[in-house]
Length: 200
Image (cartoon, rainbow, N blue to C red; front, side):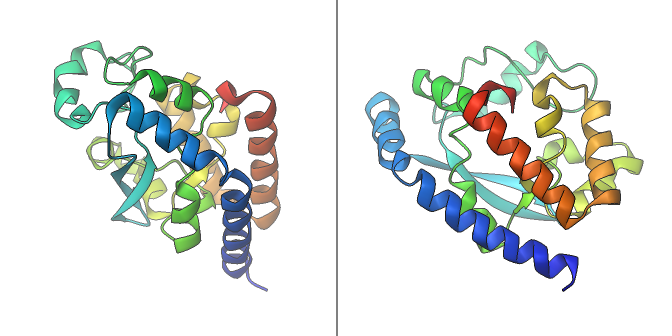
């Protein structure tokens, strides 16, 4: 059986398992979000995957007008080594959102995206269109692969990595991807989530 077929089967099985395993948390997270800041519970985000724009879903962890506020915060960007935006204490993040993000629960709805084929379970990080436009040409190959819910960069330091190191890990994954590597990354992600959720 070819790797792409194995990978798709792996994505379907793992996303079904993930949805069933974490389903009990969905209503509690949703209620907490609504109590603090109302609806919507989910936010739809534009990402670049397989060379085209796709939409993925996450639990809403920011205020409703977060996207409009982003240009006002560029001067406080802590990532000065590339096009990525990062603020440790982003004022747009709600109190519930801060807890949900710390435990990496905001990405649970993306199991649906994996099941639907918009994302893979393992792949390069999902790229924002505004960031992709600023990527060096030699690294844009990472946007041609299907982005993943987790990946090599996420299990090797995540946001603590420099942009250069993060993109190099994504490129390495693309050039060496295999069913064994996918399983290894997925297993390492699970270990981190259960024993050190702040490490992903």
